[in-house]
Amino acid sequence: MAVALSCEELWKVYQMGDEKVQAIRGITLRIEEGEMVAVMGPSGCGKTTLLNVLSGIDDPSAGQVHVAGKPLFGISDDERSDIRGKEMGFIFQKFHLLDVMSAVENVEIPLLLHGSNPADARKKAIDALTKVGLSDRINHRPSELSGGQQQRVSIARAIVHDPSVILCDEPTGNLDSSTSRNVMELLLELNKSGSTIVIVTHDDEIAKLCSRTMRIEDGCVVSEEE
Image 1 (cartoon, helix red, strand yellow):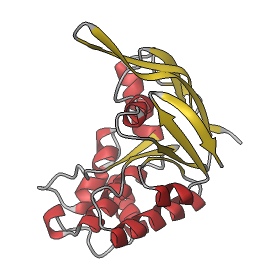
Image 2 (cartoon, rainbow, N blue to C red):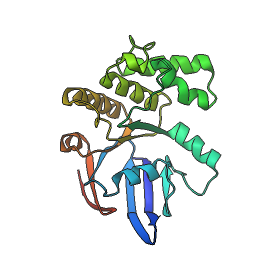
Image 3 (cartoon, rainbow, N blue to C red):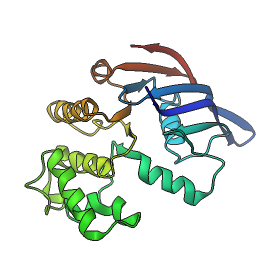
Image 4 (tube, rainbow, N blue to C red):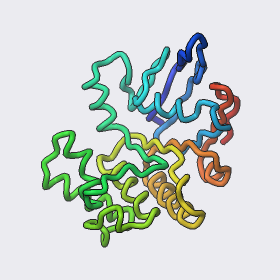
């Protein structure tokens, strides 16, 4: 199995006045193509910080991240943006959709930002929305969609460019239990079709659906369960 995402001796240290806070402490991990991995731990344990560094949103204090075999740090900002734009998809607790744009316009944005032909971008966006069950909502704005539908739009946006890995930060955190189940069923379908998915969650039921669960405490991986 090829490795979709990995990190080696990853550290993130924040300077808080005179004190140094070690948010991530020497984490090494390897996630293979097609895995669905849950990252769990108590509030403040470092799991969201880890996701931010793995995604390139935040720089590590030490260590390296590889995405599809490519280093994410020690390269130019343009090179990092190119890797993130081509190899990674992001799903957040807050949907981060642009209110003034329709569903299809929100989904095609990543493609347009990376120079895709507008006609090609529109076709891929429609295909992605169809894949998440929103073919009849492509022209609706976020305010005209339910919370679950908005999250499906954000999932379509995350997969429209066929990324190597999809990173999710509490993707069901703002949804009711029934809608959460529907979103997780969709993520499971994407995983079965080959997508590699990493989910930060506090929900044991979500973790049970994943192929592996990694637990973090005080910035360290303390256990891994298949």
